[in-house]
Length: 229
Image 1 (cartoon, rainbow, N blue to C red):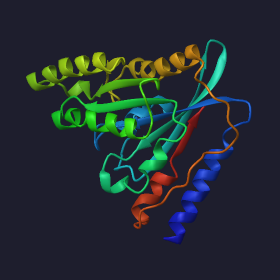
Image 2: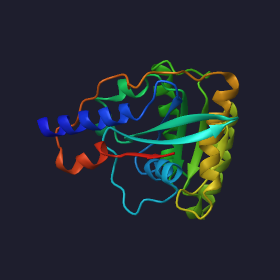
Image 3: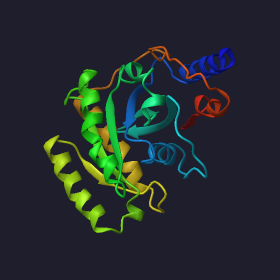
Image 4: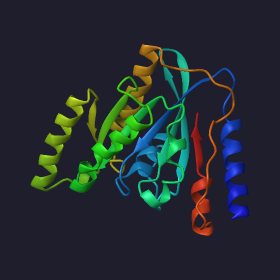
């Protein structure tokens, strides 16, 4: 609807104005099935807290945090993408523009979310994100991993990460230890800093986005631009 489109345009404008001409920033896209904890993971990193209540992401949520790597301040822009096909199919081509790094997330208690990882990796390949783009694999909700199936999946995940040359982390976005969550994103920031893969950009976010038709229950997601210096 027009009201939803206006709201999203305003949110995107405010997000764009939060950037500066001189500050280095990088876009980290977070991918995985619905319900694996992408929103909780990005929220924990950016705010230091676990969200009390979450709903399925509609389209994409933006969160950001400024970190310091080797004396340089970097603004990490986390793109928390929708895991459900019906919420992402009209926007997927825009997710991958100007992406610097990728975080693949699965739920260690949900083997289906693990089996979906090759699909997400193939989607990246189809949108020209090759192996030169830094990436990590995250097994989330490790605090709930009590079954033999979970342990087996962890071993398979380690092998998958090795094959694709990416670090593998297990964590709990809800757990008391926030360090592991920080390590995931700081690893990407440090790698980009070392390989000189950072780009300086003006205060704009490229690409246009289409909103789904339903608006009332989804407006919350377009307003979600949380930041922490």
